[in-house]
Image 1 (tube, helix red, strand yellow):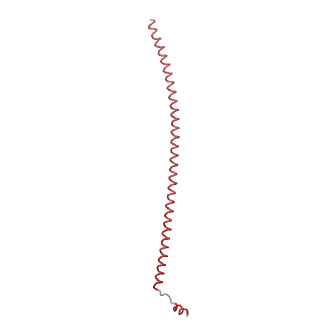
Image 2 (cartoon, one colour):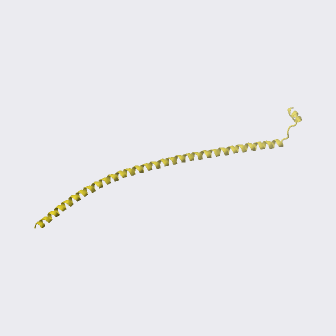
Image 3 (tube, helix red, strand yellow):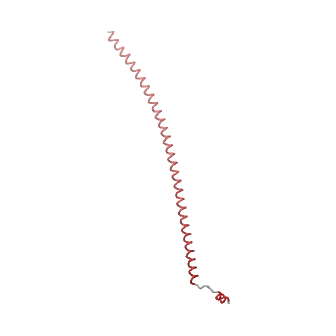
Length: 123
């Protein structure tokens, strides 16, 4: 009967040991889980920081693009104004050339005064 009574005692001791081992394993797993959650939170913070940095870089590039667009628009406006001024000057030059040509044409058709005509015109 000792063996019968001894066997349950060994089983109880074994079960107590297994229970203690399981509790220890559970405690370790809980600590690992907490550490993983902390690590996960740290990773999340790092990812958020990286995302924010990337967003800042994107905003910076958008601002650069906007500034470049403004410069391009100003250059296009300046170019248009210069073309307008050039066209106006060309019109003025052409008008002056036309007036000079008309004057030259009139000078050819109008008889030039001779010295005798000049004397007669004085009187």
